[in-house]
Image 1 (tube, rainbow, N blue to C red):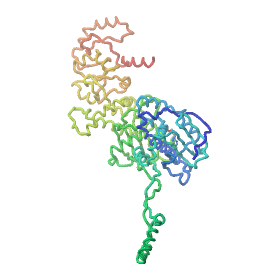
Image 2: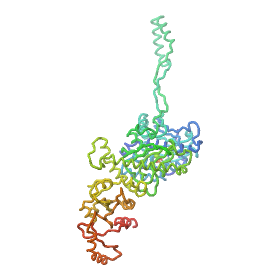
Image 3: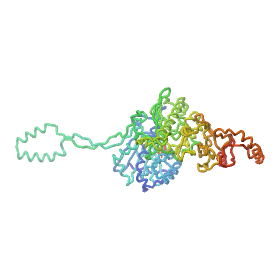
Length: 621
Ligand code: ADP
Ligand code: MG
């Protein structure tokens, strides 16, 4: 087929992906995963529309929701076709051009710093990975609402779109034709492609077929091709040996003369197993399978394992299956977009049909770092997304998901030998080795989310508080928990002591700590700006109150002579209060909090701490 003529040139595609860099050379494969993922998305979309309007699927082959891969060795074309939703002319311009794509520059930037091409899918620019292997790309697409169009581009920064008058009608869907670069001819090899599809697309929920060659044994009449030799031989024989031989030959000829030859045919070979992993019994799913599933779900194809996962079935009024993952790393924009985006990273399925990955009703904001999937049999299928969003079952689902998510994180901590409370040596099994340090890693990546959870989720505040980690005057540079703090509290100590500031180093010099340290009390360091807010919500834990040691009201054990001291220094405190202007201080009091320093300025119990003053000031400036 001749390539279409260029009728219009609109926009530009990025040529930022230089194909001779080493990163690109060793990561070319990913283009296939990105294209299959796009095909699968497009199929999800049409299947979703078909829930409320069967007509959209059409009839016959059109209604088959699958992905087909074909190789043309002569023309050096690899094509991938889906019967998904397709793209209108406008979609082609909007989705495959760069104009509307903010992800492009973000990705190119990230690429330059990290060199990790595997991230491409997360930036919403996966399609451009076609240029890793092709120097000319055609996208033929037919959407129900428009005619069939061809989009084409030669990796040169421009693309063209024209009405398709050359190719066979697609019915519906999209075919991507990659004219492979000389250095990417390996993708014309069937075995290579089968391997790649198996590797990358195991969890695609639509069948993926390859137009694959197959050697078949075929019985053919043993004539023509060998007959010329035979004839000569028989002739010479018959002339030499005479009648007896002729009789034998007649015998033979009565049997049907056939032979087997190897013949190459082509047929659609199914490459994946479409049984959804979340429907399987968790006991039968291996760690490796979960890891791979995570990679495909999160479009995160680094080689890191998720930190943890939870796969469960909820029964009762609302039934659903779910798999939740704690990613190994926080995404680049997790907290950047925290306050203006509600988007959770869970995919919602209803009875195996993908509905949406933009449901904000499934998880609270602070758990948006989790990836996963929910498939419910209870939710109705044939209603709009908006209606579904308001369905009463969602509340129950959300509640259970939160509970399971927090359980999963708690277990991550409990199974980490570094976290063990009584410091008894945990057996060095390979299992415990693998879990060593995992919680510290979690805390490092997502600790802030737990703190935000304590602020936002009153119902689960205590559960979340259990997950808090921090350093203290006694933690020796390690992270510790509230439970560990409590287990070390001195007899008679009622409150949990903490101090807030910009850094541990700064706080260690604080006069507020002098006496507490001297008396062997442990004090928590809170050095994250969010900690100030956190402590406005975290009032107590396990019946212990939190006491900011820089605030008024600090009581360290019992001081029997407190009354006497107050009495004997009465005149001094009175004089001092008078000496300091009253707009500067509220009161001057006798205190037992100091050891070496003669006096200290503290903030009132209900006022802002000096650290909070500093934070508020930096925000208003
Ligand atoms: P992403 O998949 O993250 O949105 P891509 O660069 O992979 O980013 O794709 C860009 C967009 O192009 C998709 O969002 C989709 O709208 C459109 N698209 C790509 N491939 C197809 C396809 N096979 N069928 C329909 N639309 C597609
Ligand atoms: Mg994509």
